[in-house]
Length: 474
Ligand code: FUL
Image 1 (cartoon, rainbow, N blue to C red):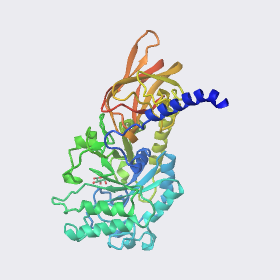
Image 2: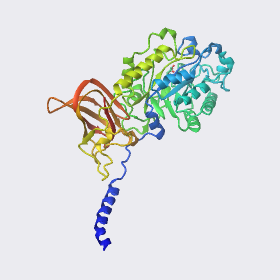
Image 3: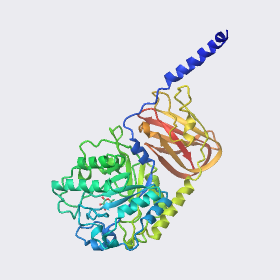
Image 4: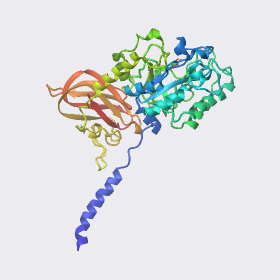
């Protein structure tokens, strides 16, 4: 008897359950997607580059490799001060020039005589990489290394034998200082003829000893150069690139291509924008009064992090081996300005509506996922729909002057054109606020302040149904 009463309810419940299961097939990725390491790297957004070595003391940008190691003598080197500065600046890691073009090694390499071992610093007993990696661990920062293949000191440079030597040097660094988040390969070579580099040996050496590290070069494979040293990614910036047939350095694609990526290309190689706080990469007393202004740094931030790129900002220590007070102060002012802009997200937790929502019965893809501050929840329109609009209701009129959009890249980069509008508080119409092509991991806009209670983002072109996981308004 009891069973007879419950049976219909059971049938209804079961069929809802089954239809939910049937429709909730996971959203499929479109095209190449980031590896877990690339995604984690992208979320770092902003970290420090440190150019330090004999050039710090000789005042040149490219040492010729013939400098006396005795010039390297920082009297008050303090890697903890670098790490503390990076941490307070809001950075997530530090990449150091372990070996720049002059070949000088900041650690006592057994593969070279041109190293700290032959300098007066700490009576030849010092190791900058050991001190910096320990300082990074202490301050919760990631540690990365730059090693230049172009070596103006090494006698084997230019011969095939050099490749083995460089691989051994890499192995030494990558097995001695704990986890490395990024291996930076400089493509620069000022010599007329460069060495016949064995890139596959270099890359496999990194992959073998630091499988979690991203390999930076002009063409990746972990992340790519932005194509300039000013810190600006393209307005259009795809994280995809076709690198077949290309190599770092002289064999790289044009800087225009590196700057904007290639839509529909087969490899996921996101952009890193490198730029220096000073006019040069190395410390020079002549540039003490030429630091980038906070406004310039804000432009760079919106032009890099705000255009789907990571920002690698160079902060060179001086001849004491410390970041000068002026540089550190500028970094703090820059942080303060960013904090002011991004302190309060006016859209957080607000309601959102969309012209199309994928329905799997679970409300998993609801539009207000974009305001829930959870990176892994997103809105997606119905299958086959590539143009759609999403409106956020702020609940009341707010005054705002900046905007952040995030596309859910773990499932691929899809959006190719969009506009953002706000509801005119006076009349029943929408006014243009911002427009662009790509979004990718993050897109930021600044504009003269407006007042409104609603904003609407319209995706006008996408290679597959667009996925947005975050929209913030400041
Ligand atoms: C360039 C180098 O030649 C510069 O000295 C600097 O290291 C910069 C980051 O990369 O290619």
